[in-house]
Length: 148
Image (cartoon, rainbow, N blue to C red; front, side):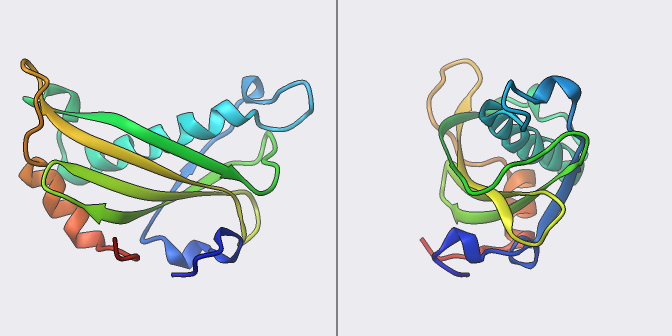
């Protein structure tokens, strides 16, 4: 995988999820507001986890807490065009998963790239626990496109 995020393409992401834009996503400047990018990252990761595990991850004893996010904006996204979220695994640890994400408009180049880190904790104690097996298996299946 390339180090320059502008060189990333859809094919660099083993999971692609289409997310519709909404009228309310557009700001006064006429493009999808930057805060929406983070919501799309969150939706893409969690919807994929629910889909691949076949379970509602909110009901598990281990919760995936978001401890880090970042986004680099490269181009505008527009309403009403859908956004395609690309998802790859950057690093799978004992109690955490770092995802590399990209948001694509109609082209092959990303409009934004980001990072999203889940740390799994016990629902009651909030102490770190191992990544649940169902999630670890799903993440292992899509593999890591980048070492680290």
